[in-house]
Length: 328
Image (tube, rainbow, N blue to C red; front, top):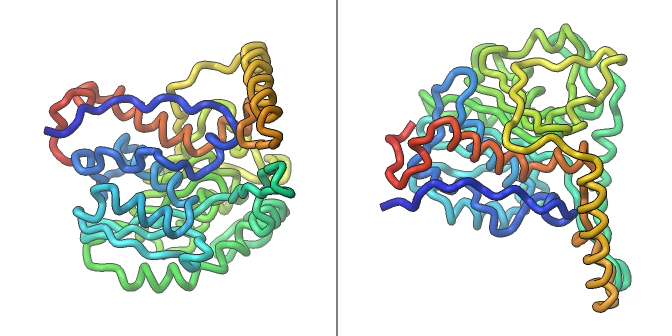
């Protein structure tokens, strides 16, 4: 008998825990009984969780992703893996079986670097930082204006994605997803592909991508835009430059309203504990330090994957029993 469905615990807010990907995270756990719903229209709690897990996993390297998929039930459901970019320079992944082609774009990478064997720092990937920082709008061929950096990044994989989509099997429903920068690229893919091609577009912590005329070119009924608590990334680029969101806003439930005082006191205590441990080891590990900057901590993809799984259980209490429902 399958194991009971249980909620995922909230992450500990340290730099390492909030930095994707996360070793040991239960990616696609219970995907054997809670299967992806290729023909869902609008919001699907199952797909919201499934795509959040995929958008979290895609931050990993080739070996990490291949291993996580091998440990899941996806291969037994016929899902095969393809890459956007290359396995060594992963811009995204494509998971496809007879019923669905799911394109998941990777977000901004954060890498840990060791300095003189005595300290570790976490830095934004230089290429991704350059992409994110080119925020002035450029003309989009479909209509309106879009973030210049996002547009250039999407152009680098657009021909590859065209070839993958053109080779799809009859009856495959196409879904697009991504977290942060990945959500922006998924949004541009929805605008790029032929009208009527996309079944669903789900983004997580996605920044604004284009202006009003561009937003009108995107699917509405199948476009869900998930935002967790105080996540600041959906607030940029600023609306005063003409940027505007599209799709249906879906607030991610499951975390209490932040208390600045509580964050400060708990963060100070955790900081003290971490510093004492590092002093004993004579090594500075930034990853062990608390990270309670509300707008940035709330952006972490682990929150989206954790809370949308928990929301799925809350939406259908039968899913929390030891007897799973029929496949979706």
